Length: 265
Length: 320
Image 1 (cartoon, rainbow over the protein chains, first blue to last red):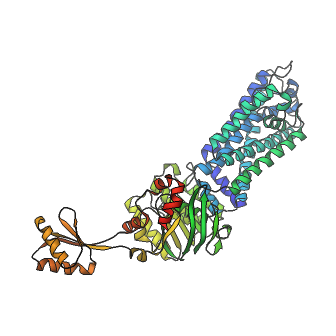
Image 2: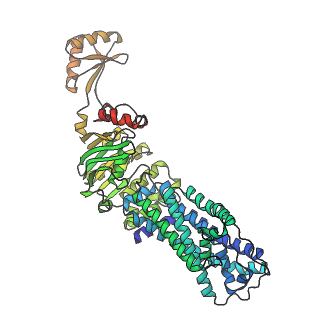
Image 3: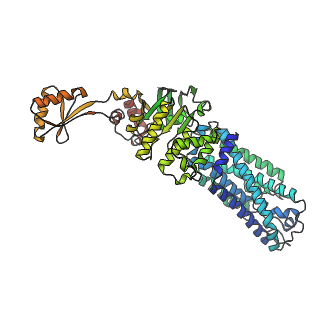
């Protein structure tokens, strides 16, 4: 298994993946902080959520957790980025034809799938840490620009940061697993990313607008709740359980397909 | 080395490989030839564990193909086009494959050296020409120091010097005791490097055996041309009078159905009849001619496009 993980990590080390993936994570981490501290009214109710974004209340931003609130608010955006790169890393094996060389060298396909999952999970952990670092660096500036006082921030900072990044990581693992499954099923990064992004930004947004009760339990909302450590609509425990089910279903579908499918690419 | 018994693979109504029985010897270079769509790639993929047979069984290196893990470490393959991550260097691509097989990094340098890419290892693969990608694909196949090497069109995209070099390498690998299976459309390539050949048409085995045995199907003729073009008919009559079958060939020459041993006799009879020959040469059918006689002149893919029913009812019977 270690061989497969090492092999995958070596292939992920290409500039386009690392610059693209880390670059987008950093960009969203910066962007969300400035947007969030500007649109949340310090005295009023939280603004309406946009597609893929869930803003915290002003009280939450003023609390010690406010310094890392951007991670939870941007969870869906970061999730879509993660889904895209997991899909890209998986589907490119088919588009380049590499899958036939890899499977011929290691016919135990479950190992290849699991090894890829672990390798991508390792890179995803690194992107979470990058997002955390950028968030911690940017949020005080963004808060002051938005008129928020960061006085309460810094209390129990390591625990707050660890909790926030852990929750984000869990949600991104689910996003990534869905991307891997979509790419394995479709063998196309474009289709997989299109389906994933289209679902979050269009389908789920429409369903949530029409039927908010149902919308709270759809993947995008569940994973945002997971990244935020639970919210008013969905508890952390329920979000974790749902996320676990999504991962199990995604990996199960990917494994079933990959194991049985002829490699004709 | 490789055996198959009743190996069959169907894709919907199309039978890509039909009841194939093979027993390939160990060692040497084996040519796998057939028209487009004849089932060569499907056969290779089944042997490598990429495609599951519909029926039948097969072994590779003595191990059943339903457990390719048992032999994957001893098999190197270049299947269809060389496949790499374009944004990574040649060295990084090979390092990734070496890591997957649990091989040391030194092996990467060895195979780069073997295929003549040692000086280009740091360049991204996307900058490589088709020929260089082909060399890299062969390098990847050589990584596990394989007992069985399966190469699909190994000289595709190489320049003439590269073709000679790679053919030499394949012959050397075969001479070292490895089995090298080369799938190719280039009959001259098969003829020049293979000791054993397998011919498939529409998924059916047409021939399997030493290439010398296949070439026993080749016919030989002697071509003669009289010094004066106006003498052609008279020369034809004179040679026919001696019992040879003579047909016009081109505008000035004649083709005599005769073996190499008859060439001197033909020359003598022509001289005795008063004709001076401007040219005399012995012609032996090439592998390509023998191959076309066996498999027909149809493009296999076009024939397949005519419909699976036709394949099953008519062409398959012809192939048998």
